[in-house]
Length: 290
Image 1 (cartoon, rainbow, N blue to C red):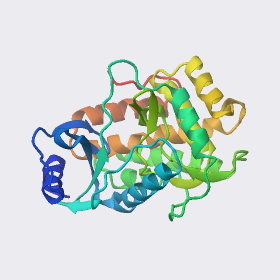
Image 2: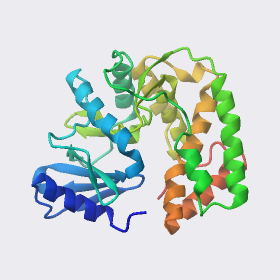
Image 3: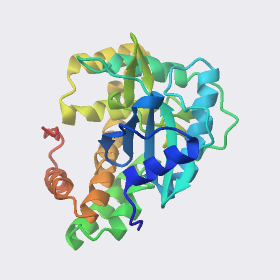
């Protein structure tokens, strides 16, 4: 465990890149810490060291995707990623977000439709495996009660077994791996798809189901229909959708588990709330954080 802060690592990266860290400010802190670097019109992402291989793939893949005309967030042309103070640091173009609503699900549907039609990239991507990061977090957690740990691993086993037996009509190919509307950003009137750390070769349905899991956060039937229309396929007619949305429910616990292990009280509270709804079999309870 590093004793240095993510912001300290970000400031050190600025020195390496020859950039001014004056005015650096946090934009987001969840699984990855993100900082605005105003004098470079850039953002710095500070990630866990165990994510290094995935981050290198994300850099390489987004450069390839940009070359194929897909609207994605772009890494800047510097030597990256950097390994500093036990973190992995990357530098990306900043896309200032205007006042008003973020991109709607229909923008994600259009981007995924384009992504799923691209050829296999010349980059070694892993096969998609649900819960690859969740299970180690559960097994090593100090914040989870033993009974919660046992329940999570058991439920994960059940869902992974169901997943292994799914019929997948859309086939396998390049997928984003963490596609949901929250990973889109405005760039003028267009939307760009961000956060490529979980890109993989896998079933295309996995990229669609996450948006439907968003009913936990207030996504409406109208929004889901717009997403499906933009993508060109209605996954609600597919019987495997509930398996993927329940896998996603559990997947979202990973960052809260890691934060709770570090003593984050708000994360521990949200983790306990989500676990309670899952253990009670409540598949519609809102998880929106106000």
